[in-house]
Amino acid sequence: MDNHEHAMRVDLAASFRMAARLGFHEAVANHFSAAVSEDGSRFLINPKWRHFSRIRASDLILVDTSRPGDAATYDLDPTAWAIHGQLHTLNPRARVAMHLHPIYATTVSTFEDPTILPIEQNTARYFRRVAIDGMYGGMADSDAEGARLVTVMGDRSRLMMGNHGVMVVAPTVGEAFDDMYTLERACQIFVTACATGRRLSVLSDDVAEKTARDWEGITDFSIRHFEEMKLILDKEEPDYRD
Image 1 (cartoon, rainbow, N blue to C red):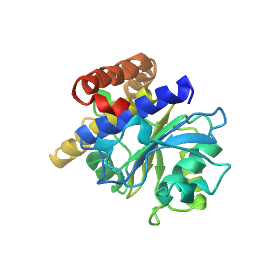
Image 2: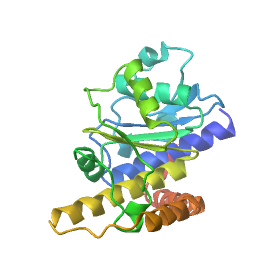
Image 3: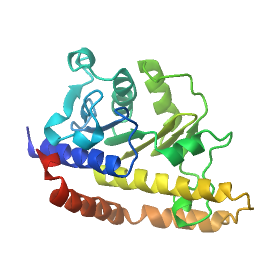
């Protein structure tokens, strides 16, 4: 194992622990992955049906899309192989991918129009920056469905999976984690505001766009958020590094 793979294992394991702490996990389902090869063919992913709160760096499975038999060899969840295998193969720029069913983002995914309206700073981060898939047809457990989702996502880094959940991709684990964190927080604010029944004060397009661009200019904020969370884990759950 080289230093790059080891670092990716540690960061990815940390992200699972954080997701569990925040209640983002879905029992023993959902998946995070991180490419360790330039072309995305080799990537790390969580083992089938392992609770996020127990995942350690050494538990992560290194698979290779050039070896289709890896799915059976490592008994991977079919949806994990279908979604992440196609994503890393067809979009090598997506170095890290996180797919979850967090409560508020999934709630928004059930709206007839799941657009996150820019009503404050967090929601504005996603102004015109989320691809929307409205073609849920059951478990995404085939290569064809995985490829379709990649096509729908296009060049966006977030996908609202209608009646399903969400997926984010990013260059690093830290950026992906912070994006998922803020996406769920934005949806929590949006759903809570909608639940009041009062008319929303939606930001103008100009202000929303400016805010979204400002977010894009502070990736160091995202990475620092992740590193701070790792410091908490180092103190309270250091075995994630094992």
